[in-house]
Length: 412
Image (cartoon, rainbow, N blue to C red):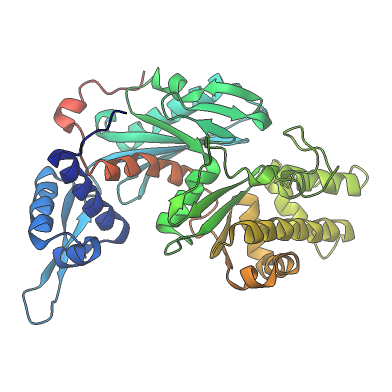
């Protein structure tokens, strides 16, 4: 067996990663706080922080008074050290956003998708068109972009070519990462949309501080990000978290994946609207798109007994789905996100908690809190943009200098 020896260089990079991650996730922090939090010596902290400051990765962020001594200088990751792009390939649109490293949105482009099963080439076209559009709008050069994260539905195998298996989109082993990388020199990373939403909420939103959590994405489709011991759980080949395709009813409704009785067929927006149509003898909710129709359904509660029953059942099904998560994973927190999940949760969170309690074991339910996502309905693209940031943190801030990196980077 070939055992790789850890070198001094490896150790230095690891220590830089620990420091940079602490500054980014918990900063601004002083050198003293960094020493306490990372257990690195004062000399190591001072030396490595000096490197990060010299390289422009980290910058001063003011100072705070100390007990009896000189004010302590606070440190943060420099927002303009580089830029990141996040793209969401959804079922109704492609959304592309440009961020600085403080996750401020600098530009955004949105392209509607008219077909429920878009050709992968169309998705690639919209992502790359959006990439160029946001760079042009913000006047940011491609050479200053650290990377682009792309969130999609389905199972993503990678990381090399990022092969996507998305039955609901009709994609079978689509090498999406390679297709995108062939058109740009900007580094590309692809992940499942529920996972990117989960990472965003764990870093910046309702998941902060939790070590065992589930972040549920409920939109047209349904998925979940699983976090255990502070680490994302992916399974053997990265397909963990397909919660929407767990069976909620034996022999139940046909799901878009081809199976019967999946949770998604009952709580996904498309499934909810279809249940209303069947219950109302073919009547459709007025609206220009799925989101407008879902809003219309919720607004009809109180004036339509059918709408009220469909929404009541949806809360019950979702509560049962949450109870399965509670019983199976014993999380300390479940965070509900996704556009239709938030629309439902904003009106019916107490009822959803009650429905979960009715189906879950008492003891694990007593240990969990059920909250709404804090980053809004469009946090999937933001989460995708954290993928290149995560790589930057893991590498300890090491990246090719922009003066040499920038000459070749382009969107073709």
